[in-house]
Image 1: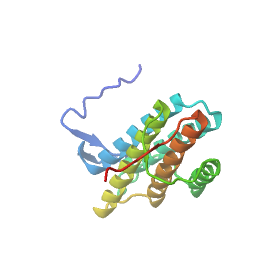
Image 2: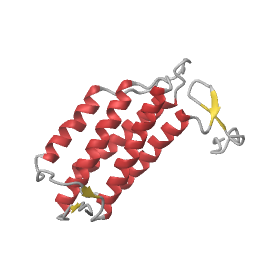
Image 3: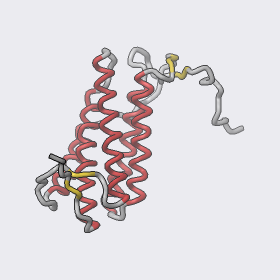
Image 4: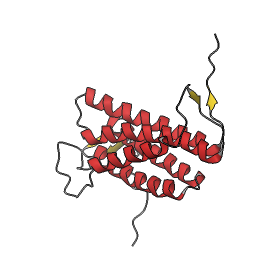
Length: 186
């Protein structure tokens, strides 16, 4: 018999971390990995809007890494999980850096702040970048509350937001869409 999607165990506002510890659904750890899940969904939407085959491959890999990040954040660091949790590697961060450098080499130097927009793919990538920054801030807040966050998780999210920003610019370049400079009212 197939397992049902609903368990009713969360009906009173509690959920379990990997390791079995029950916490409130408003716990910062839940908020953090929920934000990573939101980011993963936006990355999927970005992938749906891009036509560049190399970008599509990397975005799928990023989605896989975000599941890894989510699993890491969903673990109770004080308990044995009794299951194998995938982990991040420095090479995951290096891949983002190499891709950033490759895209950036094809772009004009940035001379002004850029307003999100110009094409749905670009706007969606900017939303993903903002959600990524929120996930990063939540990880920092966890650390400030003396909750364990794998250091590579924070580093990966930081680099991923950089990647997403450059991806926005690169998509504009590929699509022939002019960047929208911010012209502050003075």
